Length: 100
Image 1 (cartoon, rainbow, N blue to C red):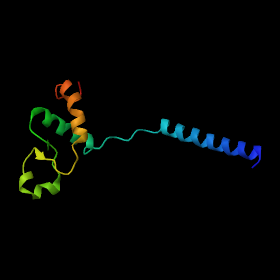
Image 2: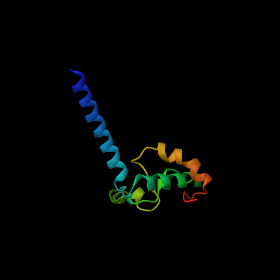
Image 3: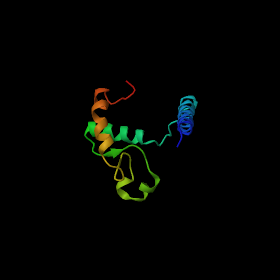
Image 4: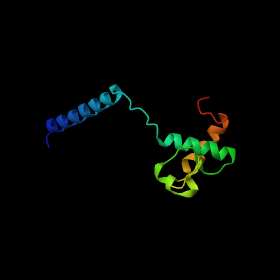
């Protein structure tokens, strides 16, 4: 491969990267959905701090068919406990309110 061909390829790659970064910086951010995992993790972290266990304030329609999940807060049986456990310390410092 000649030096000119290598230079053209490197310039094309640099232009593609510049275009990608420009597009990422200029586009509108996507809104968070109301059922985002963030709300689930925050709810579980609040309940863990209060000593309620691994329960959640969000209602999942499929879980309503089981007797143990007929009320709120519901036990959260389909998610791992990692993120809520990591969030307990910051939520506790915020007094249970992450907006502070």
